[in-house]
Amino acid sequence: MLSGRLNLTPIDALTELLFVAQEVADKAAGRRVAIGLAGGPGVGKSTLAADLVAALNETDPGSAALVPMDGFHMKHAKLETMSQTDFKGAPHTFEGEAFVAFLGRLKAATGPMSGPGYSRKIEDTVEDAFTVAAEVKVLVVEGNYLLLGDEPWAGVKPLLDFSAFITVPRDLVRARLMNRHAAEGLFTEERNRAHIERNDLPNYDLVMRSQDRADVVIELDVAQ
Image 1 (cartoon, one colour):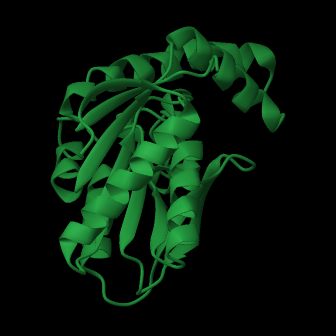
Image 2: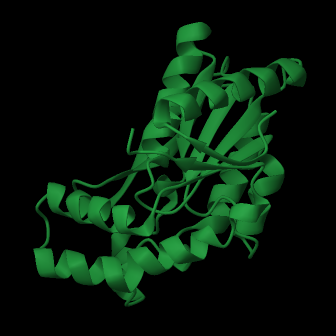
Image 3: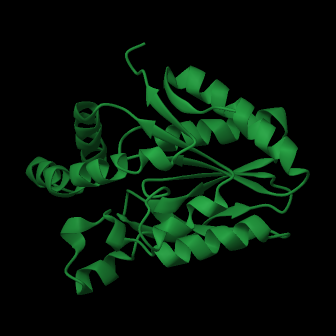
């Protein structure tokens, strides 16, 4: 089982996590398991999580499903009433308790169950964005705050059968987030830069302090 701190290319990280997920599922003897991929914004965990689900389903079709934390952003209209739109994406702008409860129900579910997603095209959540089929054995859960020790987020880790913390250098995160915010063309470059410095990078710094709670820390070697 993976542990400690590893420096891996994205391909090698995927290979190692595939082995771990299969091992955890095999040991569970039919019980549904959850593999958590945590890390700050812009580190590549969403891509890695989607690739892991695809790899698991290639080996055993229908055995894995992606469960994104981002679907539990507070609705944009709610953030407007709270005057918190400038801090969208911070821990307090998520429905954390609802996410913990949802993940608990999803692990125990014996029938199909749907969950919300987040659309960057509209900068808001979308209901019933995905459905986890009854036969799914492995939930690949990804999100920034899976390993925070504060309530309500502290309730996530006990639901994870294995957790990996994904990280890349802070300067690379800044560049990636500029590209991400610009991609949909919803805001000006000045607004995007200000949002990243005021909100996204402080969130990255906060999340970095939770890495010791992971079973393994994977530093992605994106230079290769």
